[in-house]
Length: 321
Image 1: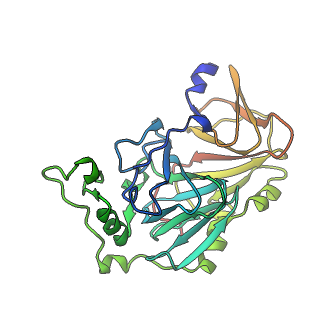
Image 2 (image 1 turned 90 degrees about the vertical axis):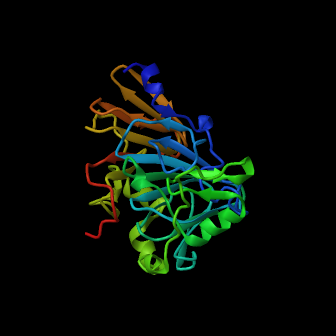
């Protein structure tokens, strides 16, 4: 591939196009300033305004959320994996029916693989605009978002309704449910009883990995962060690894599926037979399958890069093996 062709598979941080009406809580006070980004794949946005940067199926989706301080994302659940790493800022992740079952604070570079089937939310508790990067399991990301009932009720009070087709309608814009489309059903108490309420003591050890621990473990070879043999053991349909300056190699390698390179710190040069490009923190690159390549730091200083590749495992509930 030529450098120009490869550039079409790169989404630069500065070129990200946000959607401020992606989800049902877009008008709800406390959540009305968040920005959502769909980088690779269709994502789970409920809005026709969401821009998809790269539509190529990968077996997973890549997205991001940007929020100013004190802005939160409302309680929701997914049927497939939802993995976040903190690119910028300081974030509180919380979970449970009312968001009170447990919580954990993540710093830059930390990563969390939130178990499927629990309500979760997150909030920027830093002092500046923050950004978290997300990996969602499956090409259709589990068919959408499951909202806690109070989120749907609060949204209706501020003009947004969610149809049973998974689409948003904004009464402030004169929109209403089309003929034949009903309201998205609210979960019953019996259905809510199936959503667990794990404590932080249960969630944190098996589903959170700290950046500087991973950096230490990646001192010779890249460390598998999420995978069957990962620091966080799961089979969500993809694997996540972290490499740094010590574990980066100039040896060429390839994958039989597209892979994704996401620099966390430093600048990285990606080389292949035909060209090279340089990636900066926040950039996302979809590298084509079956093309030998490498990725190495291009400047001195701290350097780290998250790498995501599909495994062929079916996307679904968190692996209990």
